[in-house]
Image 1: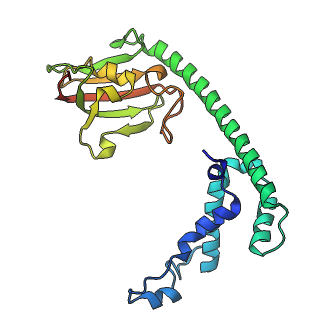
Image 2: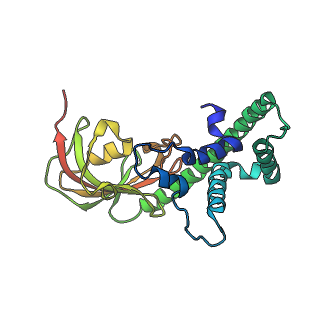
Length: 259
């Protein structure tokens, strides 16, 4: 990934934030003339912001701050605002484009290294917490630990067939972290069962589902090495090396073993 896309410069952030204000008017709209004189939101009273210009200015500032938040400890806000004023007022800037590009590249590398270090520290912490939890959880009545380290508990046992490795299954589920925070569920996606091929899910799921007769409800505790490990998907709602907890109901086998 290019560093320019990783950390946008402040001027670019302002331009992006303002882009929505520069959309061309629809000439076919009978109300186009009114739109020129009365912008959306005009006339709304907001405490601390006396008019539309102040409201827009504050909104732009919020957008810029959100973009800069990951680097807030690395920047001097007074210098940042000075650079913005210099550019917007057409003054001579203190950096050439070549210097700015060089600084940008170096800064992006620094922030990437910092983020990687934080992720590694989190991964180590989460792995240790997961190991400790599973050691205690495995001692509880009804909790079974398999040879791979997967833990499960039978909530209710169905009487149907068990799926095979090449099957797809129809399931209802809820996924949480060890602290109980939900990160995904079929309920959150409308409540209908999900259809999942077992050769495309994490190893802990694939193993656990194959233990279940259709109609069963199980609870799984999936250690990080049977889940996503350190390589979590981009934007994942759980951290690296997280131990994942799933409540699963096996509704049906969608297709039988292939081959």
